[in-house]
Structure formats: C-alpha cells, structure tokens
Image (tube, rainbow, N blue to C red):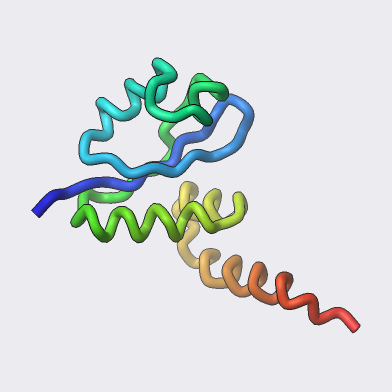
Length: 102
C-alpha cells in the first residue's frame, strides 16, 4: 500500500502551508526552488516545521484536509507538540462561530 506524510511549512511571511508527499526531502527541495506550489513560490524561503509519521496515503490526505481547516493557533499547538491544547482550540473556534452573543 502506498505511504505518505503530511507536512507543514512556515513561509517567509509567517504563514503556514500544509501538504502531502511520499518523498519529503524531494518535495522540500521543490518548494525551495519555487516549483512545488504557486503559494510557496511567492513566499520563499520556506522552513519545515512539522511532519507526520509515514502512514497510508488515504489517511495522509484526510489529515492534510483537516489541518488545512485549522486556524493558525491550532497549527502552532501541533507544531509545538502542545497536543493537550488541540481540543480546547477546536471548541473555542466552534463556539466563536456560533455567535452566541446577546
């Protein structure tokens, strides 16, 4: 079965880029050369700040989509291995979007 990893890059403007690959070293090289994505090409240099363990490619695609939906502070908690903060950050964002103010 095909394997892959999810990765997060920090771009030169401080933003994050999340992607999937089956060859992390090669993909990072392409990002640095401006050949992997239009977004990172315009925000180089990039720095690898997090990557998952190798897993089934279908799972990596699902995880990538999930992380892409996260706000920056939740991505930072993942990058900094502050896993205990992830559930609270998810709840905080959900309640904020409900607009419960009277």
